Length: 376
Image (tube, rainbow, N blue to C red; front, side, top):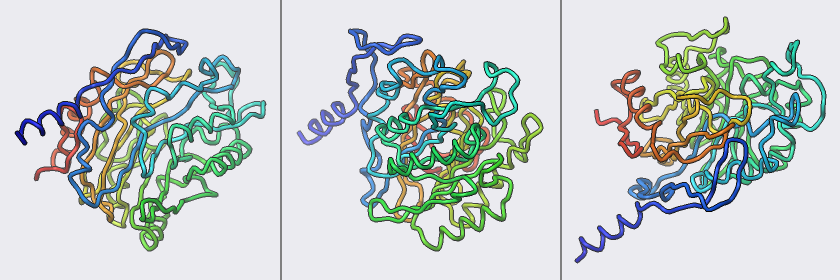
């Protein structure tokens, strides 16, 4: 009888439920059309560990740009853009994403050297869109990327002020190298790096080590974000050495991540290539080399692998050791609306890339997206 009861419990926990919504290429309309996604935690491996601490992470976030004009903003002022993925972002721990761009109402030219604004990739979201980021549950964000300076210091200062008002922690600029905060009875340290002007430099390893050493002296768990690696579907693998793209040094990512873990980092979250890359567990610490495009509306190539990404639900112990995780497969539809992917397409991609790039340190990834430490 006990076995039958347990079986019924597991079936009910895993059984999908329905959410009513319709997604068209350029609009969000509530209707009788349905899409399906499973319970956000059908069977939570975190429950197997008494002392486990959650971290949720996604890649690039750019909810629409009012530059060069408002035609690049989503319908309904973007207020429903993230609704389909809200259940997966719920957590009582850090919820991370990379803010790819600035939040600024002031009109004016970009700080980039652009002859034709219509062909210039500069991202400026309306200031109230920061409220959408907060509403979705994000409480830790990286500002270290190649678009955080698209509208100069005015854009950066306004973005930081808005994040402060929303209670969102951030790091990655020269003026804010790291953030320290408390959650779940633990002290977290967060730092972010990129190879771009005005950011904490990805390629200044000595400085990155100094930041991690400082955080390690004060914090229980250290989360690192980096924006690095070559871009596009041709660059899904993590190179063995330094990566270059359009003549720019995009970092020696294996050396960077391993060195920071050697000095005390616990969870490392990468983004920048605009595609998903493999994952590994190095010295019991979790590394995601690229989380891809999560919610990037209007001006991004979302064809093929560019439109697929993982939403990670991770679990560590109180010292940052990786225990387990879950890949929630996401795809962007239309101009950039994130939704649960019923075809689970990013999971086999992550299985393949992780095994090929990190054969000795890749985590065990099930066909349903459950993640466990390496077996060896």
